[in-house]
Image (tube, rainbow, N blue to C red):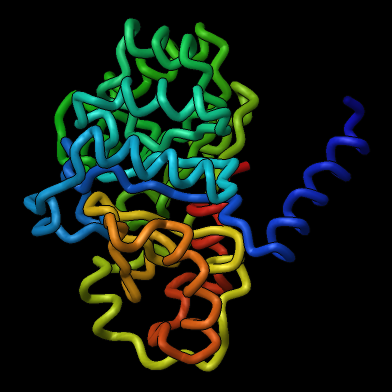
Length: 287
């Protein structure tokens, strides 16, 4: 397919999703557990102890997402590879015909796992690069040896011809390495996103914000949303209210149908925490 034709197709399905209110893009937070200890993480540490969905529950929700019209499905955390059932989840999702992107710190992706990711047919793996030097990288993650493990993972994934993307949070610790990070990504022809507006932990963020004067412009609640490790539907990973739990009595599609009216009625009491909505778009839109 020619580039122009693909762009027309791409814009067409997104316009159709907006018009018909289809959950085209969904970000599924599989777990809040993580093997890194980044001080700037937006997930409160206390959330790592929360009870999370089991395999059967997750697969059931994924099936509901497919039925509702989801096409782009992102898996994030926490660290998704902390879940021992991650391979069942990924295989099931691909069998549903969904486009899959993984958000990971890369630490647990070894040679075997890279081959599994390629075999399943994951569309893209998005890795966080907090630094380019070992000192800065390990300093930000709080884990000695994380630099070596993550860059080895990148090499394994590239050998398996898996599309990669990278993102970096701009911090005092790494501001001197941003150009080097961007040069590395350019050198392997992989896109890089710089988040220059890190947000505090969600619990503090939601408590500090006032009632919004403007609605979301990124498509949250209209063509995209997020799901927590507890099976709650919310607008995006960084907006923690409202949260409505998927259950036997309340299916995903029923919750999805309520979101636009909740936004219009002002029941979404918090504004987008991201500067101009930029980070929300990057986290939720699977491209």
